[in-house]
Length: 243
Image 1 (cartoon, rainbow, N blue to C red):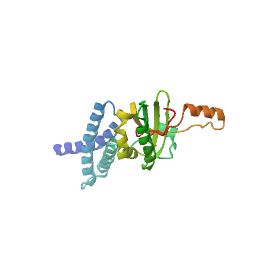
Image 2: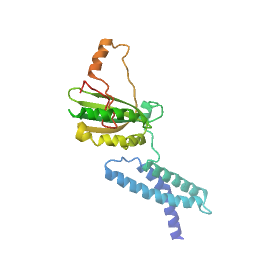
Image 3: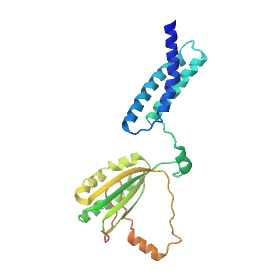
């Protein structure tokens, strides 16, 4: 009898504590990497044991109501812990949500930021690929728009391209025509380049159209002409006469 009572006590205690503890552990930061590994292992062990005991309490015969409720709680908290740990469910950032709610109409937008310095050579080959790719990227599902500027003297430029999903970015990254152009990026097109991918959390701005005089507009165009360079790839619209 003592052994049976001990087993029952262990099952009840593990079911009652294991799941909630695993759920709390999912709030532990993911960095450094060893912390994330330890957290994942603990969540897996605690959730698995609590889930096993919890299911036994829920479906077992002649189980009183209170232990059955403990088992149900163990099942729910263990499943939630596993879902949060492996990003099947994601918590909403309350602070960001209060500040940025509705910023993207409920949809996500991702930005591909491409900075580069062009070689002072191979212009014809560069523009040949660029002109083709600028039109081709518009056919990629999920592409939204892109903006670009390049300094005519330093040949340094930046392009930001927007997509509605990471899958769209991957599709553009793995596009055959894009890959062909990228194969010549280091040898023919650029002295150096860097690419970053980030999520757009909010956007707002002011065009200044009503207060900008025609002369000021011409001066700005001389400094910042949108070259149309595509950030997901290593190319841009014609900027002949500037580069």
